Length: 130
Picture 1 (tube, rainbow, N blue to C red):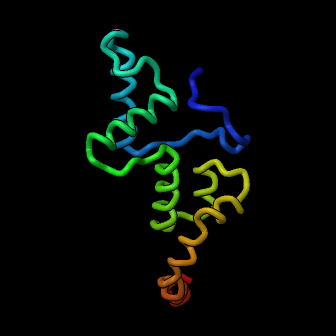
Picture 2 (spheres, helix red, strand yellow):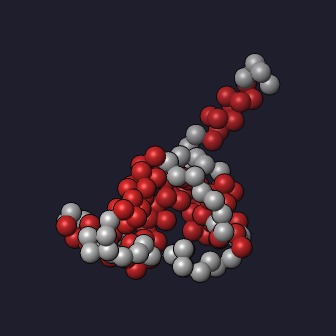
């Protein structure tokens, strides 16, 4: 096994670029597993169960509410919509086969974020470049 779980759809298989913070954290975790003896390892292999246990342990030690791995996924999508990433890009990033799935879960974020739409449209229409 070199993956966490079976994929639900063809759209689930994709390459994602990570920004520096999670990339460095994952790289550090992989280095620990790769270069330590099995007796020194916190867990022997990286899989969804071990990752879930590590998150649970970190939350408990830090006195934080338990966060499920899937909650991190939802938080990522919600943050993407908050910073005005187009819903179709979020669909592709999240690996949703259907656009309706993305909108069912995160469409309310777009409904709530309409305050600047008219201003943006007006600025674009009145721009001397148009």
